[in-house]
Image 1 (cartoon, rainbow, N blue to C red):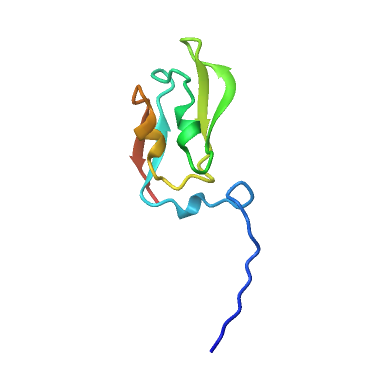
Image 2 (tube, rainbow, N blue to C red):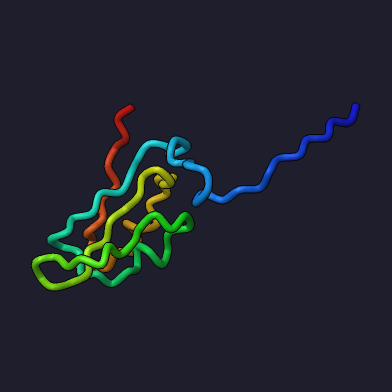
Length: 91
């Protein structure tokens, strides 16, 4: 038996895939964040982004878009000042 299925390709920027997130989500401590952008650089889904605003230390303010986050934790691992903590998802 042969089954032919064709799915329309999409990216996470087009399809909200955050509901695939496993057990954790990133939380950014904006007081610790130095605005280096490593979270944005390593995130495979591009959910960390520079808001253009600055924190109290005058560093760029990063935020996350959980609509697309998979909870992989790469952002937390890459953060040089440990400003990102992976929190347990409560569903």
